[in-house]
Length: 161
Image 1: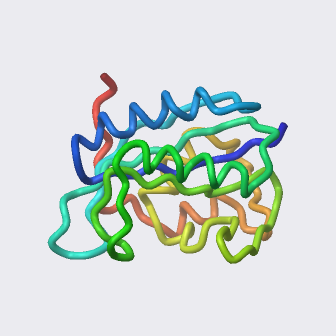
Image 2: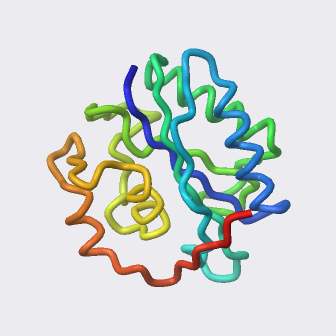
Image 3: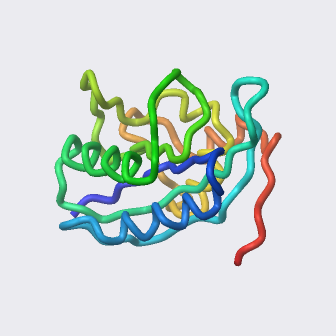
């Protein structure tokens, strides 16, 4: 089993419900156990004119291979109405593999650690809720250093319901 962190985001079609449904789907993946779910956060879109996003991170333990998991995540996205029209466009659901055990992955379809992880407060702060305080990424960076360099700006913790 490897510990995998998956980032989740939605800004269309009842985003909180989209994330809750995604968590349920992740819990049903074969050879995978859902270990934890962060608080849900709202964040501004990276592009102007889009609705705010609801974001969270989940922790999974799995024996799935990286591309097997990626395929399963993309199937969940499609099941929840994801359509890919424009890069960084609004979406019903986005599921991204942030970290996959202690692996560095550089495939055409998958880069791990997730690119721009260090610049995305909406990923780092929920990740920090689930990851060990001394987490070192496979590329040598430490989570606490990334957090120190990425202020909690534009984020709002949503109340637990």
